Amino acid sequence: MLVRGTGIRDIYQIQEVSIRKVLSVLVHSHYVNTPRKSYYEKLEVDEFWTYVGNSSIG
Image (cartoon, rainbow, N blue to C red; front, side, top):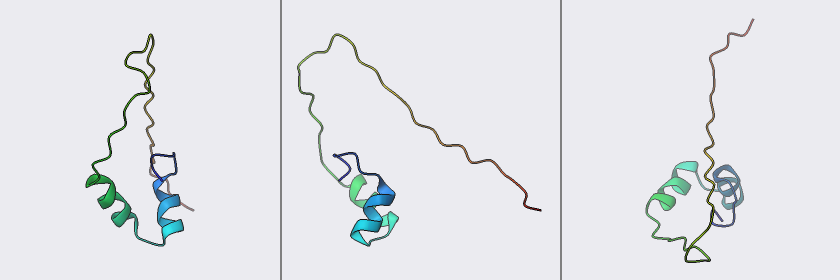
């Protein structure tokens, strides 16, 4: 499911397992993503960062 772009939270809800189990399977996976071409003229890499700030309620 991760190979097809499904998120970790979606996987644990669909499979009814814990997030820890999903991450464990991912860490122990030997999946190798091979490129479709042997070379590319241009390559773009995006980073996704999440920041959760402290907030006080009330």
